Structure formats: structure tokens, C-alpha cells
Figure 1 (cartoon, rainbow, N blue to C red):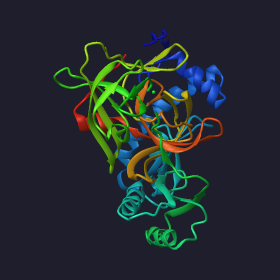
Figure 2: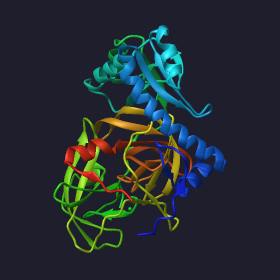
Figure 3: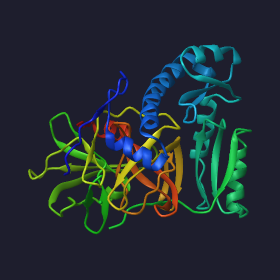
Figure 4: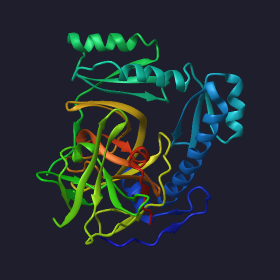
Length: 364
């Protein structure tokens, strides 16, 4: 495992240390200067705090929130124009919207309950357009797609249909940061964690762990047993028990350039925030969080609760680490496109996975 580079100190109570490797990747993939990358990370950390505060204080008037990268500020939707001043007083910009976050989430949940044909790629709440976006692969003219869209539009004017040219697919192939292997496949390590008794584990994608059996590390040395898989409602996550004494857990993510990034916690970043991914096929790439709680309709089954990004990934990257600043975000599930042309990739948030298995994140 590569060593960790010294962290760059930035003055912020919300994000006390930012790795220089994160800053370098943001400069490369987001076209930022060092000063712009640092300023954005600080603003994103502040935005996450303000979003949680306003979500609680605005109650039914809360219409979702997103990070405006051009302005380096959080934007909060409100259904009551009279609450806009409270938003501005909290340090965010206000936008008056039609639907509350609760209404959009309810409409999205109704779609989750509907059987979807393979021609429907998925659906998610988009706070910027104040709508539920349904993604269709193709022209949507076939009867099954029309029937699903008819049911979706019955939710009211909050549903918006967009056309895509490719269907999502799971990204397993035969490396997680680091690679790990099962009987006939390769996936990537997400994040290391320990249980209350000190047992060692790592979380990864659930579709990688579905078959059970033995797990082996990047060097084909025995790690332990695959012992947990969830794929469907609430995410795509799984667990590997690291029982071999040959392995130690470290709180870092591999950047695939001989360096690592330290993991400090697992606070979820806001929509619009920068995020970076590590995987054993394509290495280290960065982009932006586009939506949360997306439902994705894979050929292998429908998965809810995923986070949508514009970061590329390829088969074998599945299960790999997603990190924003120094905060763990999730593990790679699947997507469309590749790292030659770009694409859309979804990750399963890490906190629900840790909670499901009673685990505590290993930090560096």
C-alpha cells in the first residue's frame, strides 16, 4: 500500500485538512487552479453544513438544495417566498420553487414501486429543475416504455423525461482503491471498517459479493470471506471479512500514482459538489455529484438510493472508493460510458452500508 502524502492545512472548522492529491485531481479534471480548488472545497464543506441546518429549519417549505460551483455557494429551493430571507441569512442563495423536497421524494418513491422495462434506465430527484427526472434509453415509443411513462406522469407536473443513448451496466470484471478478487472476477475495495469487537472488514459493491466464497487481495494473497451482499432497495453494497493476519487496515484511498489520500470521515457532500473516485481498472478520476437517491434500472435488477455523478468508470472499478475532500462518500455501483469518452457513474452511499453491518469507518 502506498504511503500517505502530508496533508495540506486549510483554515476551516468544517474541513480542517485537504489532501494535496485531491486538489491536484480537481485541477486536472475540473479545470481549476490550486486556489480555486481550495476555495471550492471550503465552500462545499460549508454548504453541506448549511444544507442540513436549513432542511431542518424550513420544514415543509424546503424544496431541495444544490451547490452552485460557478458562485461557490449553496442554492436552496423554497416553496414559500417569505422564507427566502431566512435562507440568505444562513449564507445560501434562495430560489422559489413549486414542489417541496418531500413531494418530489414521494413521487420518486411511487416510481420505485412501479415495475420498469429495460428501456427505462432510472429516475432521480433533480433539485435544480425541481423535478423527478426519468431517463429513457431510446425514443420511448415501445408500449412498455409508454405505459411506464404514463404512470410516471400521473404523479403530476413534477416528472420530466430525458433520453439517453446508453443503458447502465454493472462494472464488475475480472481491482478500490485496490483490487480484490473472488472465484472468477475482480472488483475494487471501497472503504475499510471495523466492528464493535475489533473485527476487520471492508465495504464494496453488493453485486460483487453476491456469490459469497473466498476473497483475495490485489496480490492474490488470501484476505478472508465474502460475508454480506445487498443489491436492490436502498443500495448496492457488500462486505468482506478480513480474517487473514497478513493484512492490516489503513484509512486511505489509492490514487494509482504511488500516493494515497487520507480518509477523515464520511459526511455526505451536497449535490453539485466535487467528488473523486478510485478503481482498479481506470485508477483515479474526479467530477461532480449530480443527484442523490437515484433509482437505477440495471438489467440485473432495480437499485434505489444511489448517487449520480459525471465521473467515468469501467468494469472492474465496481466497489471502489468515492471521496469528496477528505470525506468518504460511497462505493462504485455501475453506470454508462467509459474513461475514453466519459459517462455517468453511480455510487452507493457508504453510511447506509456501514450502518447495515454495524461498522465504524477506518480513518487515516
